[in-house]
Structures are given as structure tokens and as C-alpha cells.
Amino acid sequence: MASITIERVAKSFGEVRALAEVDLTVADGEFLALLGPSGCGKTTLLRIVAGLESQTTGRVLIGARDVSALPPRKRGLAMVFQNYAVFPHLTVYENVAFGLRMARADKARIAAQVEKAAALLHIEALLRRHPAQLSGGQRQRVAVARALAVEPAVLLMDEPLSNLDALLRLEMRAELKAVLSEAGTTTIYVTHDQTEAMGLADRIAVMQAGRIEQIGSPSEIYDRPATRFVGGFVGSPPMNFLELPVQDGKVDLGGLALAAPPGAGARVLLGLRGEDIALARPTEAGFAFTLKVAELLGPQVLLTGVAAGGQPLRIVLPAAGPLPPLTAGGDILLKPDPARLRWMNEAGKALEGSP
Image 1 (cartoon, rainbow, N blue to C red):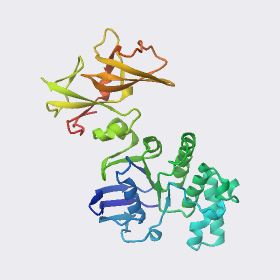
Image 2 (image 1 turned 60 degrees about the horizontal axis):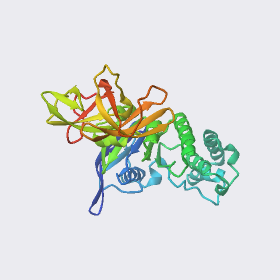
Image 3 (image 1 turned 90 degrees about the vertical axis):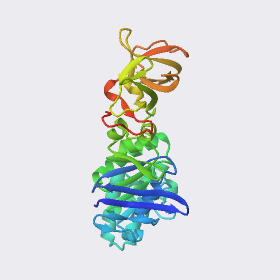
Image 4 (image 1 turned 135 degrees about the vertical axis):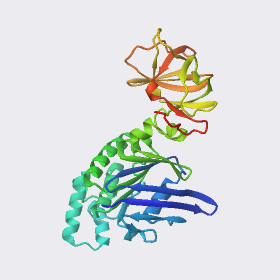
């Protein structure tokens, strides 16, 4: 296995700058997800690591070796694509063995590696079939097995589950996590699906407009977003943001006075996760929330409405708990968890000292 070091890598396509001097290190054996919306540069960065695109400036190291100018076949890595890319005319066995045969491995090693990879992905019974006889999930398992069979130093995965239906994605996500944990392969995984990134990765790098907004563990990204973009992109529902005035060291949250954070200007952004807002008892201080829509989502109820001068707000309450009348236009008194407030400046960057 090997670490990956990306140093000041930038990429331009003519006048369009796809990446703006990205710095990133992936530890040996780590699973890192590149998460972001379409067009943010995550696939371009992955393709530069793979050698399928050349960087405009900067360099890429795998282990201690600078691979910036090397072709893909000499980088010691394997890649799993979004469209599976299995060969339709070859059997599953031949597909899994393909990389080994290209490397001129002997028959004994090929057989041993195919058997090992097939066992990891639970496709032993499929080895004599052709891809046309397989489901989408089975073909994706074949693609992953082919990548792992060559025992790459680095595994790159470009949205490998996006073509699967929701239930199959859930099953494959659990299988992938178990397989890659056992294999211990250094992995970069590109996705726009925050659930995949949160569930699979040791760390997540959230990207926007060719830059990395924040790198951290899934819990750090979710609980302590560094920017408004990260908080608004990660989470379902996303983090709420309320723009509030600061006066005499206090912030008025629709009738509830909160201590202003250190470094606050004339106005601040208050970030609140929907599940960190609860119903206020009649004897408790709270802020007013006007309900627009209530949605029952199994064990939870998602309430959408407005607060603090008409700003949109979504809250999540347990469906099994005591609930007020959920009538559109009705007012509900709420209280935030004071330990879960996330304060940001007007530019959308977290203030120092924010939880």
C-alpha cells in the first residue's frame, strides 16, 4: 500500500480553471471521499491522480515516488468507473484476471488472485458467466474485484454506485466498506452523494469550485462545518442558516436572546441542524416558528416553516414523541441545543470558538 500526496495541483481547460492549487494528503490505508456537486473538480482531481489527465501545475506523489509525469500503467493503481467498464465478451473470471494478464502474471498467481478477489466480493458462483447474464450490482462487484485482484497500491473509484437503484446502493455500500476495510487499500472515492461519503470514508474532502472547502472526519464535517457551503451541502435536511443582528453582545433569535459569539460583527449567521431544535415547554424560553408543511418520514417528522423574521427553517422531531397541532400557519415555540450552535460571519466562514 502507499500514501498519496497532492501538492499545489491546478488544472485549467483553456480559460476555465477546474482546480485551483489543491493540497491533499491521503494516509497509507486510508479511505478518503471527494464530495461535492457536479462541476466542482472532484473527478478532474481523481483523473490527475490516475494519470488520465495532466495537471497544469503541481505534482502527485504515490508513496515517496513522484508520478506526475508517469502514464497510468506505471503508477501502481487501479480504477473503478461509474459505468463498470467490464468487457462483455469475457467471462467474469477473465474480467477479474484481465489486469493480471496484462501484467504477465503466471497462471498460478492469476488463479490465486482471482479466487481471493471473487471471495471478497462474493462472486465465486458467477465466474463462468458473461456480463450480460449479471445484474447491475453483480457487474459492479466484478469491476471492484478486477481492481483488487492486481493488489494495487492505490484504488480510485469514480461514483461507482451511482447507476444502481437506492436499495442496491445501500447493500453495495455496506459490502464495499467491509471489503476495502479488509483489503486495507488506500482509496480515493469520488461521489456527490453525501450518504455514501459519510458512511464509507475515514475522512471527507468537501469540494466547491475547484477548491477544498474542508477536510475532516464524517463527524467533523457534519457537526462542525467550516463554511456555509459545507453545512448546506452535508446533511438531510441540510443545516439551517439564520442571518441575525448583533446588539449589545446579544443575538435575538425571534424572541430568544443568545450570547453573541466572540468575533461577531454587526450581523452573524447561526447554523442549526434540524435535529438540534426541540419543542419548548410552556415554562421555557424559546423562539417562534410558523409551520408551513409537516412530513411524516417514518420515525421522524420533518417540519418546514419560517422563523426569525420570515427566514426558512426545517426541524426534525421524533414521530413517537408528544407533538403540537401540526396545522399549516400555526405557531410553535422551539428551543435550540446551546451546545450545538454553529456561528459564522456574514461571509459564511465559521467564527473561532464556535462549537
